[in-house]
Length: 394
Image (cartoon, rainbow, N blue to C red; front, top):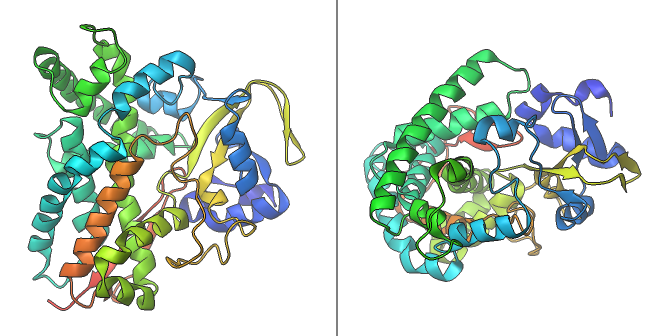
C-alpha cells in the first residue's frame, strides 16, 4: 500500500481499511509514525505473540508506554520478576474469584445508572452508561472507591491520548502530566492505607502478592504497573460492552434475539464485540534477534506492534470479518493478548460485560439506534465507539 495511506490520522479515524490493505499487500510494515513494525495477519500475530524468547516485552524508554505508564511495568517485565508480580495482580481476578463478587460489584451499579436513564428515552450509551459503569466497578476493585467517576474517565482518556500522540501535540502531553500527577497522589494515599491495613483491594494484592511473608513492594516499584491497570482496566470493559452494543444495534435482528433472552445471549454478544472492535488494538514487543516474518526482516532491537485488532478481522481466519455476527462459528480472537502477558482482567471484563448487556437489553424496551445522530468511533491503539446513539420506549 502507499506509504501516504499509513498515517496516524487514517489509523485514528478508522484503522480497519488500512489493516485490510496491509494484510493483503504488506502484512509486516514499518510505520514511521511510531517507529515500529506492524504485524497484521492472524497467524503471524499469534506466532509473534507466542514466541516470548524472540519477541519479548519492550522496556524501551523511547516507547509511548514508557512516557505514559513508566518503566519497568508488568508489560515490560519477563521471567521470574514478571511471574511474581502477576501473582499479586491475578490473585483476586481468577475466574473462580470473580464469580464470587462480580454480581454484587456490578449489577447494583448498572441498575443505578439505568434507573437514571430509563425515563429519558434516549442516550449516548457509551458516555452515559457503559463508561461510568466500567470505571466505577473497576475503580472499586482497585480501591479507588472515593474517586469520582468523572475523574476516572478523564484519567483513561488522557492516558490513551498520550499513547496515541504521534503528532507530539504539547497540549496532549500537558493534559497527561496533570493526570499522572493526580494519579500518583491518589495511589500514594491508597498505598499508605493498604500498608497500614491490608485489605481485598487490588492495590493491596499487588503490594504483597508473590513477596516473602511480611514484605511489600515499594510504591515506586508498583506505580508503573498500577498505571497500566488503570489505563487498561478502567476503559476496556466499558468500551468492549459499548462496541458490542453498537454491533447489536447495527444488526436489529440480532438485537431482538438478545432482547428476547438477555441472560442467554449477552456473553456471546460481548465476545463478538471484542473480536469486531478490539478495545486494546495493539500490544508492543521488541525483537531479540534478526527474524523474518511474512517475508520481511525485522532487525534485532526493533520495536514490533502485534495488531490484534487487525488479526481479529483477518479474512483467512473469520468469515465476513468486518461484520458483527454473534452467531458466527466460535473461534478464539486475540483481544486479550498472549501468555505470559495475557490480560489479567479477562474474566472480570467478560463477567461485567455480560451483566451490563443483560440489564441494558432487559430494562430498555425496544432498544434501537437513534437516527438523529451518527454513531462515532475513534482510535487504533485503543478504539471504542464513543457515541452509541440509542433510543427506546420510555
